[in-house]
Length: 120
Image (cartoon, rainbow, N blue to C red):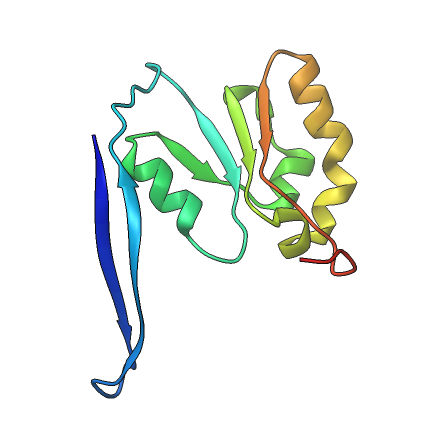
């Protein structure tokens, strides 16, 4: 099933229209594995948190310090949000812990990351 939805953004203190867009919408019947435990490192907004909640995924936001020192084996999956390394440069020091998590059977998902020197 698919269709579209129209979104408008107005200035907070007036009725002036900032932008109006029609975006495609696709329905997807999703299923979440029972007992899935997800840890995630958020980025600059709450999109990932809201998306996981909408799917009914039990998820906990993790700090870079928690990635460095906490017991990661309690999670099936760890997600690094879009530009997570930009939002939390201290996370780079924890890369070996994340790789060990994967070697122990965990799933690591890293959404795109870019440096400020890359175009686009």
